[in-house]
Image 1 (cartoon, rainbow, N blue to C red):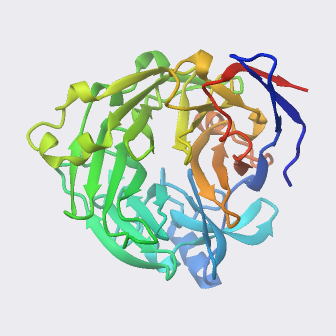
Image 2 (image 1 turned 180 degrees about the horizontal axis):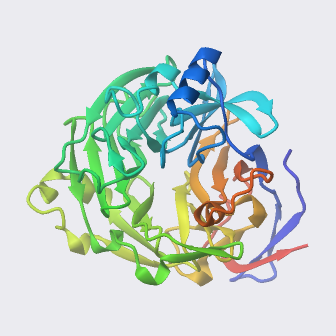
Length: 420
């Protein structure tokens, strides 16, 4: 399904040399006009309808995470945060069953984990994004929030994807979040003892607090968490109004996107065109933050500015950082070996209609061992304005193989792309 046309990259240092790269378009894996929720039984569906816990066509998918396992095959997970009531579950797999509005979702790990709607804090309340590890584990950050109400403390859950069972739970204490103010939305995980030699028991999880402008760090060995704050985590009011596909909306979100190359944590607020970094060893040392969450200010670096704001970001195994800018809509790639500025922002060919607001992206190694970029795109500009139409495709999961671009020497590339 990969569609190719010639793409020529000109080299800056040796303009006579030409690298010919086969152009790949984005492949749409799933798409929805409105979300389609599956239930274990018709009785479960009717009870959810009668109680108001299920409003048909409600919700928007925010997170995406593909996973391959030899016995279960490839599964794609998505998250539906509970911005309002009427969303029956917040973490789901995408099924092979299709209806007119799109593929049917099924609750993960099962419906019983989701039907409390804030009344039982041992279950899952609301999730924005998840992180998958090389250990066949899913790290879930449950905000505990529905709408604007904090029903439960936020919690970290780890599921074994081989057995689909919970293997660890950690409830965050109020020294790392503020009830009814914090919102923990984006986790990134570093595994210090990965397979095949490691036992996957030493993890650090970094979690963005988007509304209270901070970062929460969880250490699995100590089974504890702490908080770091910095001025770079705050929104920039000059970038609080966003324009996507000709429609504008205001969203003053702070700390939003996270990525790592195992040495640095890269991050940016949503309301910003800047990218920042901080060393992981600084974040991982709990004593640095024991007395002051705003310590170590000199360790945070401004890398530079991109051409426009963007939402989610991710990094591949070659340390290429990917992001989709808002205005204009373009998929960009940057390597930390280069200066971070608009001139060094390499654009990857992509149909802007498929990536209007990319709320999550992941790099996934397929069963052939090649890395793919997976993105979930929502038409947030229409959600914000109340103009979302149920007769149009509004949500998409798209992917692209990366092997054609991640091996190219970025230091030698001019920033001109010629398409023929």
